[in-house]
Amino acid sequence: MFAGFYEEIHEEFREVVREFVAREVTPHHQGWESAHMIDRSLWLAAAENGLLGLAVDEEHGGMGLGDYRFRMILDEELARADALAVSLALHLHDDWVLPALLKFGSADQQAAWLPRFMDGSFVSSVAFTEPGAGSDLRAVRTRAVKNDDGGWTLDGQKTFIGNGISGDGALVLARTDGSDVRQRGTESSFSLFLVEKQDNPGYQPGRQLEKMGLKASDTAELFFAGVQIPAANLIGEAGRGLQHAKAILPQGRLGIATSAAVITAEVLRQTRGYVAERQTFGQPVSEYQHTRFQLAELQVGLEATQRYVAAAVADFNAGELDLINASKAKLWASEQAKTAVDACLQLHGGYGYILDYPVAQAYLAVRLLTIFGGTSEILKETIAAEPR
Image (cartoon, rainbow, N blue to C red; front, side, top):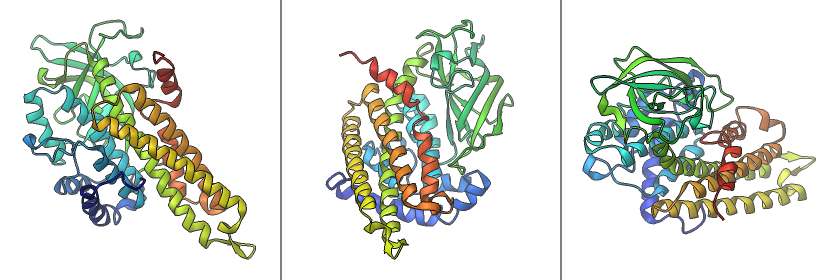
């Protein structure tokens, strides 16, 4: 990010992250890519280094690093190591599931769950998306029926679930008002549950989905058949699951926006180095006017994105980032990243199409950013509905 964005304490944190990435990620990442699975050892090592659940307060054993700049440093160092799949897996845990527990979990729930989020013993997934619903959460069909003992019975299917196979449980949005699942629900039709896989035979990950990129981060379908959920695993209030889900969207979308800015900056840095070394017709590619002009345009676009994202981070840190502005930041940053990384790939020529080159991996990674967490089209609808 630009000068003055980070302070000394952030750079001290960066040294911890950089050493962690060099020791625990870089030697193993290619193996995880080949296996299409991040080993649990990564999560345990991250826990030992205090890199899980950064925002958890000291009362619950955390460091209380709610300043989102710390989270961005983790992204930056993983991007420098070309370990973008690891970044995604950690985002799902820290930016999508953990905020629900921090915002809406009871004191008992937080005491029981937060230590597990930080010690690597509970890797989480966010299970909102369904085959027929996509970004339309009111079309969710997964259903939870209340039992006589106050617990719930869960039935349904989710898809595109990151950490779906490797994870230990999921934050599940389910319909709880008994309405016809063939019809879109109302604001009060849904509830949120934290559902554990262990000792729940009806909780079954389906096939692992073969993605274009970010292969080390496993993605799967989830099937729930008669899954028993204790009453204590209802997050927030019954019938307010949709509102709770919307309340965590700003942080989730901010995480995608910051990732987009971080990846763009790293790919542009790598591209400058490549075109300075690569020679065609007796001169470095960087000496062609077209290359210089294109790099200049990409730099200006990056700095505009960085300043936009920095403003969103400042709003988030102040507790003022709402869904509209988080959606704007994600829309801008993700679309800019897609365009910029495509241009950088072109500047690599044929080598840009080879997966051994980081730019090719980044090209596949950023393509997800305009889809994940709400497609660009859905974001435009959200922004267009803003009162003027």
